[in-house]
Amino acid sequence: VNASYVAYGHSLVCDPWGTIVAQLDEKEGVIVTDIDLNDLDKYRGQIPILAGRRTDLYRTERLR
Image (cartoon, rainbow, N blue to C red; front, side):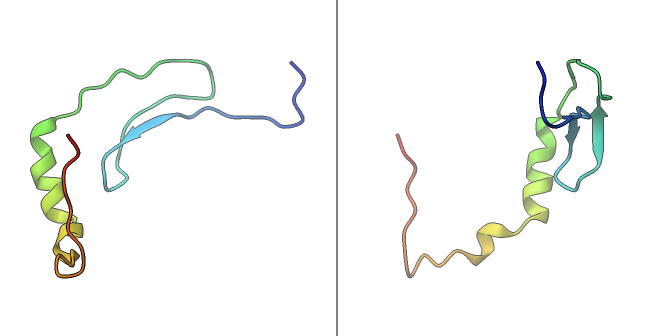
């Protein structure tokens, strides 16, 4: 295939703060890494996005 551009790899897995957990080079490859789901509460506590909700203006519901 002759493309008019060069696409590079360097796929990676990072945490919410941008720390690289695993990274590939420019060649084809697959990343398999463990993600500690117990850290979710810690990260969510450090990103207070839900603190700014205006439930007086709108409501949120879970889709079933």
